[in-house]
Amino acid sequence: FPSHDRSFLFRWKSGKIQIEKASLDTKLLKLSASGSIKVMEPFAYSNLDVKVCLQGTETLNQERPDLAGFIALLPLEEGKSCFPLKGTPNQPKVDLPNLTGFGF
Image (cartoon, rainbow, N blue to C red; front, side):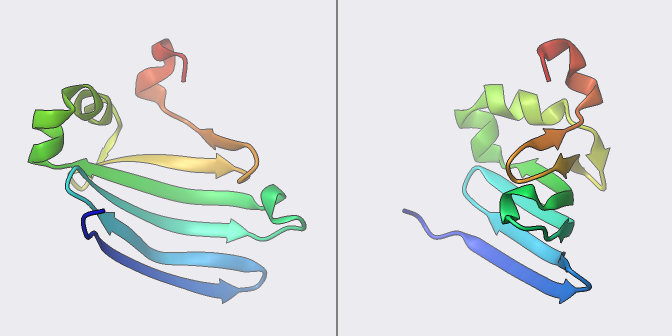
């Protein structure tokens, strides 16, 4: 596998995992996340409150225009396409208002 730049910073505070910084840069995509996970027993039922942001690269635009088009439909925040990730690890929920007509 090609090398990827990645950076993660988590903190434990009052029964929550605080995601201070999580980023992964690949040839096709830059992904970042922040927020928190309220830890429950079992972990699969923990509560997610995470913001995930995606930014496609020029390589993604060239090699996977379908995915680049999908990412472009997400709401923009500071030049990145972002969406909230709620629910639980067992049943994650994503609210994508721009994509409601597409079955999301």
